[in-house]
Image (cartoon, rainbow, N blue to C red; front, side, top):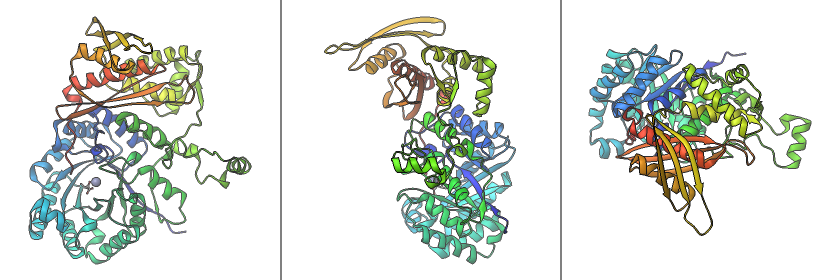
Length: 514
Ligand code: KIV
Ligand code: ZN
């Protein structure tokens, strides 16, 4: 048997994923995701674009200082100031990488950069050299490679490798390529660039035509040894190749692919939920691997087949990717030890004893209201505790009067820095009344961009997980709240969003398109 070559998994959820409009994350949220990426053994985590904002710089820095087992990367344009900012953010990394890029397609060079190809080539070489003075590991990307001239790509790739780049990335920036074509370009590049053996060839595919995963797999079959991807396929416009689909395609069809990854797939569903709850982007039910229906069988014929022999209709095991089978997890009488053990099984840990105690108390409160507590409930509850600074703003009491034909009224008691405030407001609906009441106290004047409710489990006693997206002065933040009462969850989510808005360190502007 021929030994499988290693495929490097480069996750860019925290950089390209964050470029999805409305998906911006605070540095603490990014760190929570990065810790799970590390646990699932992602090789490279692109933590952000350090120069784009102070918030992103701090996020890259925090992740570089904390994560030890994955390589941490920051994006930078091929500009000295960008590269130096990336280098500074990565100082504390146990293994750091600067990822610098410049566009190489005729359309980008002529209209966007307004530069001649020779100048682009010179700038690329200069950028790689500057980056190599700061870190050992430099990746160079030819932005819009799939629409670039082949001979020019060969020249710039050879020069970038000579200048010290260890990874060369050929992005399908606009999701234009088709699988056969893209694979064959990677194959030709590997054969035509004289020093190709001195670098890893990488791909980064966007999903504008729904082909990002297919294009990436085709490139892998043709010699690419790094794929760039995101959790849930999040990313600019239609998104990037999804990590879970790539990893599971490679595992499930080992007969087709000559590569292996180090990814532990049991973290796939938990991290998908985490990313969805932090960004407020729900996962569509029929999404491969992580959608609620990905392992559900509706037809009687299929159910019959599954009962007789699972493989008749299932090519993967749900448990392998972290589906917990709606497992009844804990009950009202469970104590701290059982709670802590179950969190361990789910791969959840807390940074402080305080957070653990808060979560345990919330679990007890939930168990009073809800007879059966499932793993999904615990995950939502933990998200609620970990979601950020809410300490100075606490929901004490909520009363909503709603009668057909009359405007609903919300009466709320909020504790803010040891003072209790009573506020009251009407609204066009109950949720509107709650938000108006909170606004009358907090006066954030932010624009509400999104309000979404997701049932955590099935049944009418399920917890509702609410996301509130607010925009103010070009900044976008997502607040979350979970409760069996969706009005309470809504109030918590709005308070969380307002708190994040009031913490400048905890937010950052949406990135401009790269
Ligand atoms: O899509 C793209 O080209 C990118 C690069 C910056 C790698 O995201
Ligand atoms: Zn991209």
